[in-house]
Amino acid sequence: MKTAELEEVRRAAEGDDSALAALLQRHYSFVYKYLVKVTMDPNQAEEIVQDTMVRCMENIRRYDGTSAFSSWMITIATRIYIDKIRRKKREQSWLDLVRQQAIRRFRWQLESRNEAWTDVMDAMTRLTPEHRITVLLKHYYGYSYDEIGAMLGIPAGTAKSRTAYGLRQLRKELE
Image 1 (cartoon, rainbow, N blue to C red):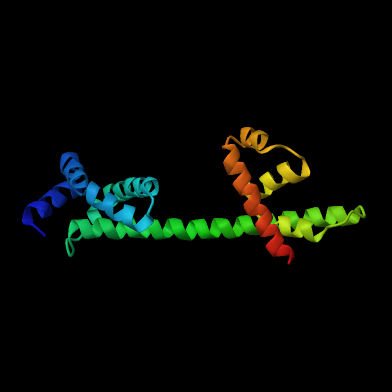
Image 2 (tube, rainbow, N blue to C red):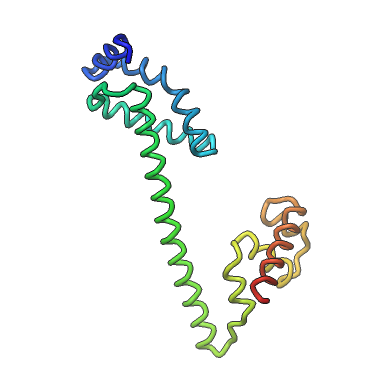
């Protein structure tokens, strides 16, 4: 690493806000471009680069100079991204569990009132909410694609394609 940058890091670690700002500003676009490639999502990359900058500000004293400053920042950014992925998986797992419990509860309620839980109902639980909603609105409640589109704030063509996809999925499930 250049001695000038090491000196700037030392000053930043000692509380020089302008040195810290210059360091972060100089490396911001490098970290952002890296994160865009990692996440494939500019919005998520922007969020993570912001978190990275905060983490760098909080931990500037921990930087030991054994690697390039940009490498240190990339390491922090990567760890933040991996943590976000892990958190999202845990959240999704929890949401799936809650959803399955709600389905079992609904099925029990129907069966306890001697109402049938059909194979179609079972297959409907495996559709995404977007597809389940359009299928129900079209084929159970009889709304037109224009009406469904207006209700959901989507074009009528999107409502039609979601319904068609949902029906295809239902047919596969029921075969």
